[in-house]
Amino acid sequence: MNPLDLPFDTDEMLAGLKPWIECESPTHDAAAVNRMMDLAAYDLAAEAAIERIPGRLGFGGCLRARFPHPDQGKVPGILIAGHMDTVHPVGTLDVLPFKVDGDICYGPGIMDMKGGNFASVEALRQLIRAGLRTPLPVTVLFTPDEEVGTPSTRELIEAEAARNKYVLVPEPAAEDGGATIGRYAIARFNLRTVGKPSHAGARLADGRSAIAAMARKIIEIEEMTGPDCTFSVGVIHAGQWVNCVSSLCEAEALSMAKKQEDLDDGIARMLALQGEVNGVEFQVSRGVTRPVWKPDQPGTMAMFEIAKEIAADLGFDLKGRSQGGGSDGNFTGAMGIPTLDSLGVRGQGLHTLNEHIQVSSLVERGRMMAALLMRLT
Image: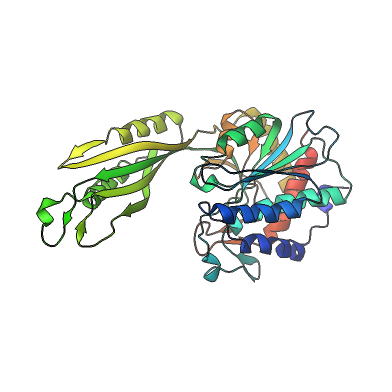
């Protein structure tokens, strides 16, 4: 049976996806992420051997599912790698509920990346129900911390990838359905200004504001952005009382570059900003880093050509791009393991209160994943 002819059903996929979306799972809420892993484990239990891996560093745990195959554990196979954490806090469903409107379906995390994860699981279900055996054994690994740079599970992902011949990542597809064949390097930084407290009303001049100093540093950091390396600050925490000059301000910054040498230069420039000015100390420490996954690696491109042929049969021209954004594909691609990313659903508005997918892409991406699993040898 041609895997493109498998009886994927849009309504059934939406019904199965709905509980995943309504199980909110923000990264920093370990209990919420674990509830999502429980739900996915239940949905996978009928077809696969399930293993729950405890979380660490305050994050939720992982779910690993190995599908029955005579060569499971004997030969390198295929790893489907996805994350179940989202950027949306618990309660987002109140303003972004799961809702279907024609070919659009809304919900927190539905595009990034629960929709793609679910389509991949459905692809495996359809293959098993049809009695089709993939040439290579398949493992699914769902992780809890990708949205913050994968600080607790990078080693696990890399160890699992090293046991496999291919890695498929169902992160969101490009708007035209395109796949990712390389990703830019990303570095995170923890920033801190340390000033001197005082009463903001009675003794303002005695204080040294950590908030004001951080504001000036943010402008300086973001103005370092150029064509080869970008800088942005996305998190700030400071102050408890408006009538106190704040002596501490903390922030987080992100830098991205197409080439590792450009990112290394950017890191050096960030670290060089440290020092004391007007009684306020500015501190910079390195956070997690995603390495460059260079495009055009032979193994990845061979896999992309197969995917391109499948896409043609599905009625569209699959484009391959190297891009920013970062994913766990950075790690596996940088290891030299053939990796194909952005195999998930089409949509728009990821990380916003308008996050949605094209409903029709659920079946499209399910069929693409099923066909890839049958053609990779």
